[in-house]
Image (cartoon, rainbow, N blue to C red; front, side):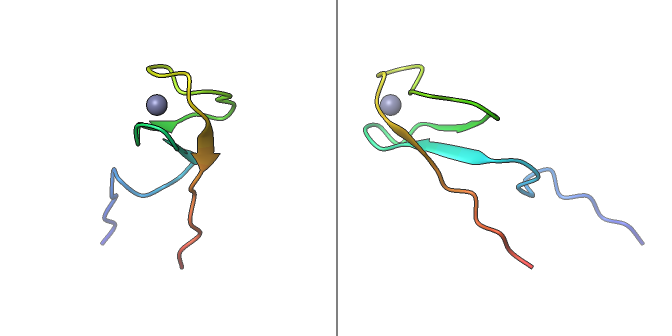
Length: 46
Ligand SMILES: [Zn+2]
């Protein structure tokens, strides 16, 4: 039985340090809403 979780972090996750905006992108330099600094919060889980 295969269950696909749409929320499984399959790629890098970025979160804005300023407003908490989250985005899944490969190369995101700044927050699209407040231009704040985004950080990669991808957590490898087994
Ligand atoms: Zn932001």
